[in-house]
Length: 215
Image 1 (cartoon, helix red, strand yellow):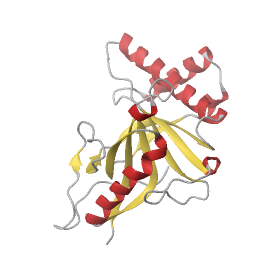
Image 2 (cartoon, rainbow, N blue to C red; image 1 turned 90 degrees about the horizontal axis):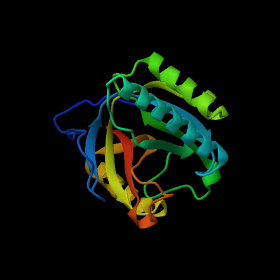
Image 3 (cartoon, rainbow, N blue to C red; image 1 turned 120 degrees about the vertical axis):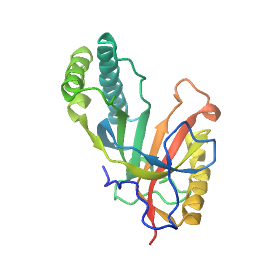
């Protein structure tokens, strides 16, 4: 994963990043300070929907659901986290404003899901093993568990098919320019809708981009 920076105010002119709370409004970018967290992650390449991508989703959800029910039995209830994705080109260059690579086979991705803060590493490892026994897959061998550092971001809610995301991304980059910020790291998506069950025009995706001051 890319290097992530800790939220900070370097000068009195630096924009303010609000604490993360609630969901962004559709199509309206906001500046947010995202706290550090721990996630299960898996890396891959190629277009969404290929075998590696589907296997990665299956391994993530299998491990996370197993952990969820393990914690629930112990009286520690929590929500099932959303699936997230970090995207870049295989040559390492980031997505530009309003730009998605035309060839999805040239994408590199990391899928991730947040782990509850009170879950121990032993509980996470045991859940991965139990899920793999229940539904064997080589993808479980590629799962990794670790920290994701705090970061400052511009984010917006995109409503509609993934193909129209560049319109929302352009608004995000306009917000960056006006705030004296520039993008760093990979394009980040948080999937609140399931394309297998939702009409494309009803899909909700949080688009997020880590940023830093231009000077």
